[in-house]
Image (cartoon, rainbow, N blue to C red):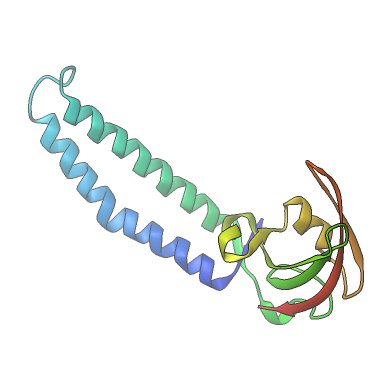
Length: 155
């Protein structure tokens, strides 16, 4: 079971609709067109259309599986005083004394450039359940990071 924000759930559903209603029919048309051109063994257009068909079907199935096994998070039910899914967490790396702020999200929403880290990442997992002032230890490839939680806000 994966938990998604309402926004991400809607984005995935919209992409799925777009693939099913617009992209896949176009792919099918291209496949029929290139198939009608004769010998398939020497038809690069046909091979490309088949590759695109497989890629599109694979993406559709992947998105369907995500939606089937996901639930939208009820933000009202999330704790306000401890790190949980969708929390914005500001913390200090105690070895470098640098401050960072990230939102804890599901793996399907992770986007480092947007400041979103997965709850399954070493830092995300270490911060889960912590309160302001708590020290979290995250095992990362370079060693153990000691992180002090400075603030928590719900997004």
